[in-house]
Structure formats: C-alpha cells, structure tokens
Image (cartoon, rainbow, N blue to C red; front, top):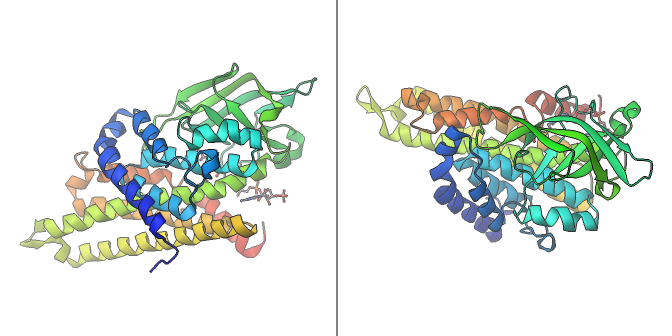
Length: 387
Ligand code: CAA
C-alpha cells in the first residue's frame, strides 16, 4: 500500500523491532520504576545505527532517510518510550542540527561521535522563565575582547539527556536588545569548566530518560564552536524542532500501537457476563476509535516525513506537516492509552501490566518540543499567513 516503504526500510524496521522486543522490553518496567538511565542499551542502539539514522555514513550515521527514522522510532517506543526520547533527541534535535548547520570541522568533532552512539547529544532551548515563548531568554553569551571566546552565563531547564550528555547544542542571547534575532547557537562540551548540571527532574513518565537543568558560570566557548552566524540561533532552533516534532509524533504512535495491541488481545481473551468482552459493543466502539486514530496518526507522520524529505531535496519548510503529525499523534496517544486502561479495568490500573506506563509516558508528547497549543498556533499561522 505504501510504495515509498522499500525493502531497506523494512529491514531497519525489523532490526528495531527485534532489538526492542529482545533487549528493551525486558528491562522497561524496572527502569521505569528505578528511573535509572539505560546506558547499556543506548550504547547498543548506537552500535546498531539507531542513534544517527539520517546522518550520512561519512559522518558515522546509517545514511538512511526520515521514513527509516520514523519506522525505527515507532518500534523502539512500542517497547519503551524512554529509550525513544533519548533516541529522538540524539537523532533529530542534535544530529540533524549539526548536519544542517555545522561546519565540516564541527561535524567531524561533534557529529561523528554522537551519530555512532559513542557519545550522547542534547539540545537546550528552554529556561525556567522561557518555555513556549522561546524567543525570550535570560542566559547570555558575550564575546571576549580578544574575539576568541564567548563567555556564557545562565541557567537552562528541561534538557533531555543532560545528566549523561557529552555535548549540547545551546541557544542563548548574544544581543538581548534584538529579541529573537539576538539568539545564537553554540556547541557545548560538557566536560569543560563553567558547565554544571542542576537537579534531575522527577517525572510522571519517560522516567528512565534523564532530564535536568544545566548551568553556565563563565563557561568559555571558543568562537569555532558557534553553530551558524550570530543572531541565527532562533531560526536554527525552530528548524531543528520541526524535525524533532516528527520524532515525537512517532514516539506517540509507538506508545499508542502498544496500548492498542494489548487491548485487542485482552478483548479477545477476557470474559464477562458469559462472553468475551470484545463481543460487547461498548468495547468494540473503543477498539474501532482507537484503531482509526492510530492509523490516522501514522498517515500524518508519513506525510510529514515525506514533506521533510522533499524539502531536503528542494528547500522550503514542512513546519505545518510536522506540527499536524505531532498534535494529532500525541492527542491520539492520550486517547488510546486512556481507553486501553478502561478496557483492562483494574488490571489496566495495576503496575503489573504496562498500560499505566503507556498512559504516563503518552502525556509528555503533548507537552515537549512544543505543546499542543503551540502546534495549533503553528498550523493556523501556516494556513492563514497571519500571526
Ligand atoms: N523554521 C524556520 N524558521 C522559523 C520557524 C521554523 N519552523 N518558525 C519560525 N521561524 C522564523 C520566522 O520566520 C521568523 O523569522 P523572521 O524574524 O526572519 O521573520 C522568526 O523565526 C520568528 O518567528 P515567529 O515570529 O513566528 O516567532 P514567535 O516568537 O511568534 O514564536 C513559536 C513562534 C512557534 C511559538 C515558537 O516560539 C515555538 O515553537 N515555541 C515552542 C518552543 C518549543 O517547542 N520548545 C520546546 C523545546 S525542546 C524540549 O522540549 C526539551 C527537550 O530536550 C526535548
């Protein structure tokens, strides 16, 4: 049916499915309970090529396209959305940014080790008082008199993978009086003086992924580590987020698929009032609505992935398609996981089954990399051309 899905795509999908079932699913519940970062499986995902799927082989990646990326993301997230978060940020927020905006030297030094999975990358835009309104930030980078280094000060928050990241793409103000046109992007080495990590966030879901503040105290960033030109940071941040939103949509789809499959199996097996619960029309209605939303999410994700691939060839933006995919897939994941718990009744509410984990993990997809409200804003602005 989808003739853009090739044999090569099916191979990476199958490899991701095998790895997810054999290596991730067995440890997912334990890592959710302890909140321990799954470093060993993340490193293995790097060896298998899942941490830089769209990065060309010359820079250490798998050299595949966005369809390959979403197929692999869905499989990983069906087993565990925490692994999916780490994979998504590494691939689309970090590697995509370096690939699109980095110099050759920056790619060799900072893309290759992250695309191969030897090192972990992060992306840092949000601050304690600057979330959805991303153009307002209090952190600052000031060029020193010799013109060799920027001195960075400030506090960033909600940075996925920060406790383990070796390198971070940071967005901060170089010219505060220029608003979003004063934002500049930098590549940060987390082992340098002046960088530290703040408290790790205790989270409702994706508990095995690690999220923390990062703090800059007179951190000296060489001019060679500026990503793009001064003042280009906001556009870089937004461009990269468009790619990230396809990753998060795929994560939401993976969670929803897992919840739907569990619900179908339960409806076929569980009996009440002398019949299978799947024979009750109220359960049938739930399953039918869940399936429609899962498949509609998948179609919007394919549309966004194909739009991204078309812009890679011909230029332009795919912001609306990415936002539509993220908005619909994340809200569908909340719907589907809620219904899945309802179908399972008490068992769905119990920690003995993964349904309640799917439900907790789904919620973040409506919040990070742009809330549902922000996605609606992007879609409506794209439709009308108004602000
Ligand atoms: N691609 C390229 N350029 C873009 C763009 C895009 N997707 N979106 C906006 N721009 C450009 C505009 O063209 C404009 O350029 P000019 O100045 O040349 O005209 C400029 O950026 C400013 O655009 P807007 O006027 O539209 O900016 P705004 O202040 O109104 O904000 C917004 C727009 C869509 C609301 C944006 O601020 C936004 O997406 N906010 C949400 C931020 C977000 O997703 N944060 C999550 C961070 S990551 C995370 O969650 C943690 C993690 O680790 C996973």
